[in-house]
Length: 250
Image (cartoon, rainbow, N blue to C red):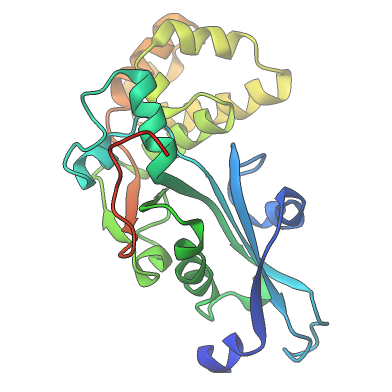
């Protein structure tokens, strides 16, 4: 079935976080995606194969963006840099939203539906900038096909995976320069969370010689954080109908 004909049998509607939950098991990142800004659902009209009407076949989740992101500064020529934290946060909240999840039901993958969902929903967010951070950019460039510009990094996949693992535990990239703060969070993880991050750390340290046997603690955390100096693929889309606004008043 050609992609153009598939689109005729689908429609995009606004949803909520509950619409994302049935799709979460199909994504490589588990758990809640973050402070949700909007959710859109791709639904069948009932004439797509054996899929009944109103059946969700895909979902995209937009969240609020992190106030500090190195590659955003590169992509925007430091538009958001050089500000105090409060001003920077307000400016990012006004101008930027992040694509946190794009999930297509496995039976309908390979039809270009992920790109379609991104391309059709970005303008509906009514902000000047949409961004995304992903470790799968080299494997599946669907965000580029949707019109986003990619800023690839040179970091190994294992580095991106560990950064993503920290993020899943609420330790965001901008916090990875604070070893003591990160260690405090690690010390208060649940047993299952500890097991999860330990697996990620062991994978990361596998090629670090004798460092791979370091025991958990501040010394190991400090060593790891000094090695997490790069980022995964960063994607950005500038809304052609909206200019980035420096002023913070409505």
